[in-house]
Length: 75
Image 1 (cartoon, rainbow, N blue to C red):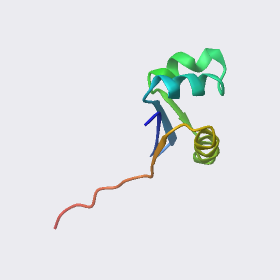
Image 2: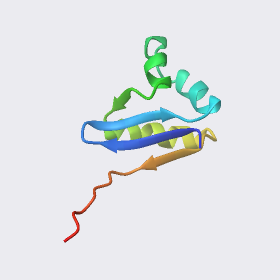
Image 3: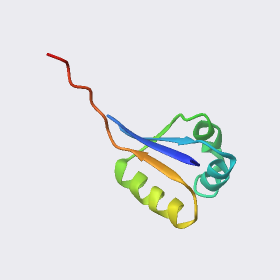
């Protein structure tokens, strides 16, 4: 896996998981954002994340898109 995208309440968290993922993300974001992205500190709107994932996969980047998960209380 090169990039992990995980839904949160505020958007989608971007987490690069490989050098390939980091390098690819660097071509899509301004240099001011690279440090935050490499540290997994960036959340983008879900719609943008879907487009980003599709673009990355078309470029041969392995993307793991984790839809929002919720835990149900046990009875």
